[in-house]
Length: 243
Ligand code: FPP
Image 1 (cartoon, rainbow, N blue to C red):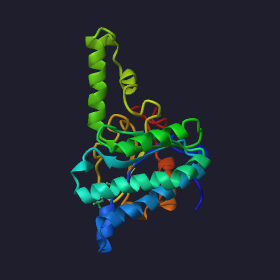
Image 2 (cartoon, rainbow, N blue to C red):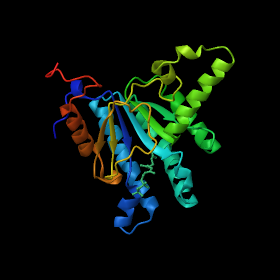
Image 3 (spheres, helix red, strand yellow):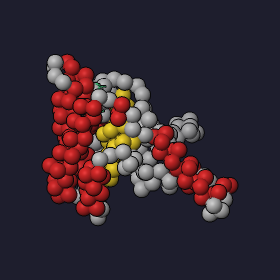
Image 4 (cartoon, rainbow, N blue to C red):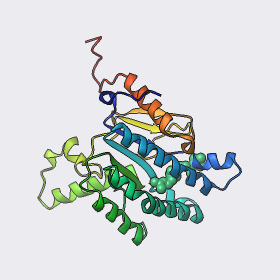
């Protein structure tokens, strides 16, 4: 399959990796087996993104609502996150990938917190793919935190409320170092954003694909990028053909 020419690549692709549970159920396997297969898809897509020269890839690995899942499943997901960093960080480093984790750090286990800090520190100088995992992440919580921070600054006289613009607001989000996503992909045929990058996705192209996440890989990823390259983005203006 032909790779999309680099000039047509979106600057930032974000993915809601959905369908692990259904993938497992179809095979009469426990849900955890679906998540294990999901990690292989993560690996495949990260390698593809890095090979293509994509600048930014953000993956929704664990939402702030996912804590409500059965303890065994939450435990399995945490275990997979640990194992992924243990096994893949060397390769990510070699590829020049810079790793970031966005989300609340307050609820995650201490060792995972340390592991996250270590991965971010080890890759801080890398200039290849910016790979961001949304982990214990919720978009509404992120926006509320930003609002609280600005309100506090205003209350303490450090900020004039009249100077609050979307650009200033965005500097208080976890993603302040990243461009907004141009393309948000959700797998498994569900048509929702599920509290993912709500602010940042204002103008993103949305792609909903039927493939369950464990079956998503390099080929499907490239197909989504090619589809994106064919879309016309207007950002609220009219197209050149009409203007
Ligand atoms: C949704 O499938 C997926 C998740 C809740 C987590 C995504 C996690 C992974 C892909 C594996 C872990 C990731 C890393 C980086 C180690 P679902 O369980 O909601 O599927 P369902 O809707 O079919 O039940």
